[in-house]
Image (cartoon, rainbow, N blue to C red):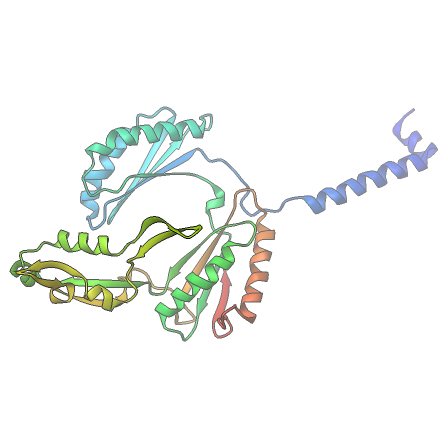
Length: 324
């Protein structure tokens, strides 16, 4: 019996069969994941090495070329791309699609350990990044307002960024723009020479003084109390009054050798929103999380933040823009 005859002779069976297919299709459609960038393992590994304050030409000769020579012979590599910029070297290694990326990363890590001793002393340990689509931001947000740029960044880092990072599915929230607080200590060369001090001595003293150190346990009746010394600087005045040396029994304070200013770090990039200084958020999702669902949860949290944040802090006086 052919299919048309079965359909005519047994309509109820065909109807039930079709209804089951439609029902299963509707359930599958509702549960179907929607993702702008689905998880794809691209056989690519990037190696980044930083050498602060060094020009691109020296970066190429001292860092990039030695790393290229050590990494290019790794098995499975068919192309090596490198970029030398001010203070950093980026090397991109492209592997065959048949390669096991985890094993390739271990091989690259081993070769980096071998060549690390031949790099200049000031080069920071190279870092390895495997290509992952989840590393790309799924949302960009821009915030602007009439607040001081340094105050605005501090507020967003301490009050808003943690709230967004606690959203299920959000891996990280990166902030660009604004002004980040920085305490600058400008030493006087003449005064250092007169006191016979070096810059390294001043740096070591400040590093040692700016610490909270554990003292250990102490018995207090039937309780054991853990003690610690709070030595971290609270304000600029404490930094100025740090004793860096003693000459003839007289203490030498940092304020006698340098100017200490509570300012901001060097401006390397500027973010503007509607011709006003602003700050940009880039939100990255966790690997395997649904992009649409995470984006909706972020928008819901932003709506709550615009109404008010605990501590009488809110986004009501700020302009929030989502862009792609």
